[in-house]
Length: 430
Image (cartoon, rainbow, N blue to C red):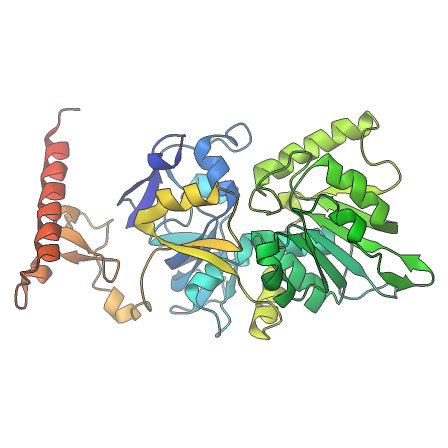
């Protein structure tokens, strides 16, 4: 299969698109997914750079990627998924280390981390959902203690700091349309209309140094005014110092980032690494009395996200109560540009890597694809059909009338150079 391999830690240009072996055979609780698209997350960037190697050391080379959408090609005996079913889900970091991630044509997933794609969603939209939507859901309902049942009664209100980023766009919609909160959000002036269209009752310009002074404390009944939860997708102790004044007595301040400010008012810097660092720092600073006095300060950690909540999110997407905001879609061959854009911290919504173009072929059609594990198959006899993003035998390219345009000649020359380089590598002494 084709995959984006990371041979060593470093900047984005370390990535190489190359042929890789398929993952191991399925266990009874797993599914093999033919990948159509892979979502980009800041955690991918932190893993690539080596920033998380103390927490999650990788065995290099490795294929990264946590979010995925695609089609089931094989299903374990203890799963309910059928071959050909459109699915989306996530690969945990532990499984990325063991089996590889989603930047590849195929990936083996634990069935509990997979859900059927709502009919209205494209593969690119579905791939943008799992990590960010589950993080937003957990920040509000698990760490923030705002639940659908509303056991305390009365109104609830949520303030989303960084409402236009990957997590923020989902947090605004889940707070408003699922948890039925009065919802306020911060973003830049240029993204105000977008955030308002997602359901925010109040949109605040974070570039205004006095935006805190313009926030109105919503009335929750029984004389209580303020926010039930504040979701901090931006970071910075100054936000905590200001924000705690706007919480009701039972309110919770949930940070996804910690004391360090990233990317202005966006939330594209949230990652599992930043969450762990924030948790460690908050423990130390609470011990020193620097934070947490009087109000509940909580750090969202990966253990708070639950795969079973993906079915709730899928229902919200199906009912069009939540929609996906995509900033850019990149080809698998543009993964370097994709990571550079991700690290600019200016993405509005999510970025996605398109692994395969168009609709997936039927299972019968796909049976003709080369099996990398077959010893009788020489992958040097196959080339990439970039139009359909699949491997085809060289002989198949010789059928039909030959094309004589400049682009075809350049492509043929490029392929000859790749063939020559492959032969030179196979002949090189060990």
